[in-house]
Amino acid sequence: MSFYTSLSGLRNAQSDMGVVAHNIANAETNGFKKSDTNFADLMASSANSDPRMMIGIGSAVESITQDFDMGPVEQTGSALDLVITGDGFFATSSIGDGSVLYTRNGGFSLDGAGNIQDGQNNVLQIFAPGADPAVDAPVNAVVPMTNAAGSEYAGVTVNKDGSMVVSYADGSSEPLGRVAIASFVQPTGLRQEGQTKWSATGISGNPAFGAPGTGRFGGVLSGAIERSNVDLSEELVNLITAQRYFQANAKAIDTASQISQTVINLRT
Image (cartoon, rainbow, N blue to C red; front, top):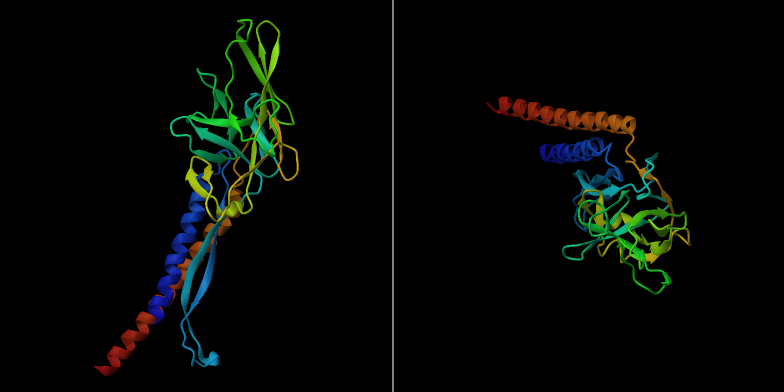
């Protein structure tokens, strides 16, 4: 029995080290959110078991929980680099199939078709001018490359309230819309899709959209990017702890093996 009990500890230690290694590998990934491994004990008993005589049978990984605390903010100077100063996610829609993913990485840029996207063909979602965030659904952020007078695009600015204004070479400007912020009842239930993006699940619930700086929706800061929330010092300590956890369980298996060998020698 002790072999399998300690074996479960070895497996858990490996899982823990894998999570820590993933955190460390993404210490420089913009918008990345670290994860923590949570364990639970395992017990086996029947209805007639004496609770004073019960022996545990090991442990299991209960959950790998994401930590959505805000990471450090780095100034970049690019108008389309955006940071959510609070809770919430940017919503992006795939140009290919229209699927919606959510991210904290606000590193957006303008492509040749005028889409404000993340470089992976996912377009930022905004509320059209005059739209009511409580009623209207967000739309793709597409910048007209020329205005009604035929003047060419010159630049875009994003204000603290998330409003986006497009300027043209003739000195005129036009509102593009307002950045849409998505919020979830249970963000730890979001499914990680890679490339610092998440998708909604039954655990997270459906997103609620709102305008920046209203209610529970964080504001928007232009010209900056949110970095990873991984603390390397903390992760290195976690790595040492996981290593000791692994070594202790390996030692327990070795001890059980020695006891078994002693019993076998007695019989012979």
